Amino acid sequence: MFDRPLKILLVSSEVVPFAKTGGLADVAGSLPKALATVVDHGLPHNDVRVVMPRYKMIEDARYVMDYPVPFMDRQETAILREKEIEANFQGTKHRVPVYMVDNYHYFYRDDIYAYQDDAERFAFFCWAVLETLPRLNWQPDIIHCNDWQTGPIPLFLKTHYAHNPFYNHIATIFTIHNLQYQGNFPKEVLRLLNLGPEFYTPEKLEFYGTVSFMKAGIQYADILNTVSRTYAKEIQTPEMGERMDGLLRKRGTDLYGIINGINYHEFDPTTDPRLHKNYDVNSLDAKKENKFALQREMELPVHDVPVIGIISRLVNQKGLDLVAEIADELMHLSLQLVILGTGDPYYHQLFSGMKKRYPDKIGLQLKFNPVLAQRIYAGSDMFLMPSRFEPCGLGQLIALRYGSIPIVRETGGLADTITEYDPVSRQGNGFVFREYSGRALYSAIARALKVYRDEPDSWKHLVKNAMEMDFSWARSAVEYLQLYRNAITKRAQEQKARIA
Ligand code: ADP
Image 1 (cartoon, rainbow, N blue to C red):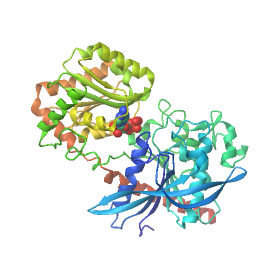
Image 2: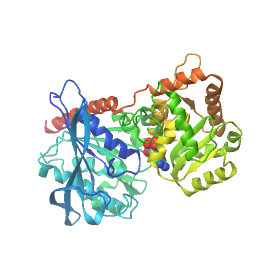
Image 3: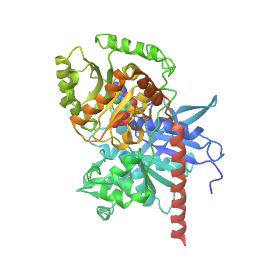
Image 4: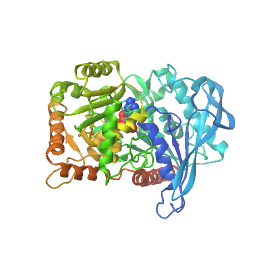
């Protein structure tokens, strides 16, 4: 059955480098490149294409065609445009098409989300994606959907398109990047999905008095996955299941976890043009110069104290209240804290207050600044992620690559990628705490500082462990291909059973 490369369509509401609000965009921009170039089972490259909305900030997308999309009681026009992302494979370039669904009314706006009519916008997007396929004369084997914005696609395939021979072999996989964002809307949105009240039941789309787009994806996709094994388990518990845990337990045998990779070309301390000085595992003195440059940039005293970096959305998920809880104790230690983040005003105030009290110990930028972010990864000795929950986390993976040692809470993807360093066996790549408390965080930081201060050789070894880990996309792409095959087989079996 799998004697040919796969035709894969990845659907996402955001894709790097075109539009980004979070980790989803990184995944949607990187995974397709890896899927297109990875050699798998000796087969040549897969035919991978991506589709996203065309937002206002995306310029110069080439016109492909326009076509009518039946939507509610009218025909709404979609314009299909195209750009591309380029993948490098052993010196040759591969082109991954990125289709963009354009509609002036729905997508020509300043922001990506948080509009009153988001349900309508993304329902339209999902219809438009499916309607475009026959017009492109391209029948994917698998549609890889991501997060609630794409949840209606598996639902449509199993309902409206179920008996249409162009569509009924297409398998779907639905990836949950963050279960907290569910796309729950009033019952009336059934109209947008062209479905009657019979779908407003707990077995179908009803979710605590709403219609949930995330639930549509979870309920109707052939295979589900999330972005780490631990998070896949955690979301099946009432504590971390965001009220979807029952449903996820029901689909437990179809629910997998695949850790995200990072782009090893973009995030490479030996070539990263954003750094003060490039370095590798054998030139850690140059890493130290990045520290001094960072201290100057953040207007901190320039000297060789341990620098702890935080780069984060400033939201409740990230566990930063624990840092605030132990701030005074922490600031009595010989260290500096460099914080880059934006988000809730509550945290802006919190960190601004801390900075006022300890101006010589805290460097703070309340902005989104990708250049400074790289300088912090390079210039810090340790990198803090005390998250309450963390589906995968990219920060700790980038930190490893730049030799900044992660101090993390043992949850989700952090638990799957960071292991406690043991100075005796010299195994491990970071410092890990479990209990969600300032005390536990403080103790993990103290363990890190002790090795840093008392055992410089051991610390060097730890940095080497970190920098030599491989969290590039190639490995995860192979796992995704296996999941796609599972989904395709499952779909084919169901089709066979239906016909028999
Ligand atoms: P999440 O997707 O929940 O925000 P991740 O750790 O998966 O968390 O990904 C966060 C990504 O965004 C990392 O690449 C991190 O470097 C980057 N990032 C977060 N905040 C900022 C910021 N203020 N400026 C620049 N980059 C940031």
